[in-house]
Length: 455
Image 1 (cartoon, rainbow, N blue to C red):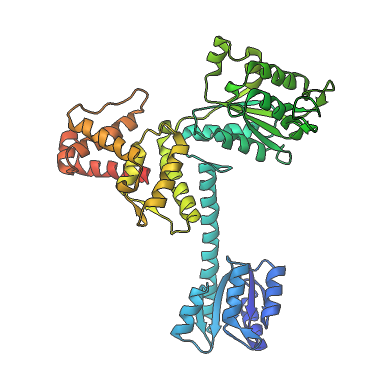
Image 2 (cartoon, one colour):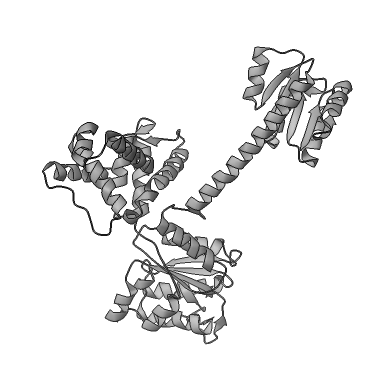
């Protein structure tokens, strides 16, 4: 490991170098400029810094060091030790504080502890980053098994040019997946173009996709390139492809088969190299059966299907998403990061989310904007969440029991029934445990597990 000793007394630098050179690679400097130069040129792990330098303030140099290299461990040295300077140094980022005359054994011991702490901190950062990477992919958040499968698919297809069809309900994040495939893959330097096939009238959509020549129609005063030409070498994302008119579906098929486009009013086809990623919330096989979608185009687009599950089927992602949106909207609104009360967490966890992730995002933006305190309570959540909660508890209070939908795992069914029984008993754990025929300790362990999942 590399150590930098900063002291304007050359004797101190020499004696410390001699004492530490068997264990470390030692560098020395006598002033701020020389110190910062060494820090830029060498991979320094730890610094022994004199508080009182003739060429400048050791405290100011400490701040500059922590600004440039925040992970470097700094131990302050001074002959004028005081509580005030010690506290100030610690606030500025120093690991510890030593007074002169120095005890070399104390220096060795403290330096060893400081560098061990630094290594541990680095390992924690690496592990934390690994955990975050498992829970996110290119800005898409999810630790559920369903989302992990999506991440694995993106990783496999990002560097090839095969067409991808993304399916899922509105608000599940289909465009995010398309962007991840493009920007994480081999076409990231090319253009990424987005067109919503349901939002543009047919004549304008054709011109938007394929371009037109000057004079091709009324108002065509100049030649205009279409998205396919502008996306040459990149990716085009056709959102809501199920809404595309049949006449344009034939032109899309030609682009896929022949890799050429013909602008409106032109007889000269133009070669393009474009990857097509499409998305829909419709069942395209049903649309094919109804005659609303070309079967040959469906198979050309659906080479690699990626399905995004609705949020109600991956509830374990709700706490992660909520944490993300709270941080995002708190920062956007210039307020301290807000948190959810335990009851607000439970209400959000049990909400069915017909609008999926987009709806959760809107709910938390609403809550951050309108809540007056740093902790968001149930009263701060939108009415839909509160009504869902009151309706659920009212049904249970009416003695109708707990309705468990098909497809639940045994663990999820058990979780719902335990929480239902606890609520029915007014939170009384002894009565709940008795009714469930389990020990109070067993009930307590289960509740701790469920609360961790909702955090």
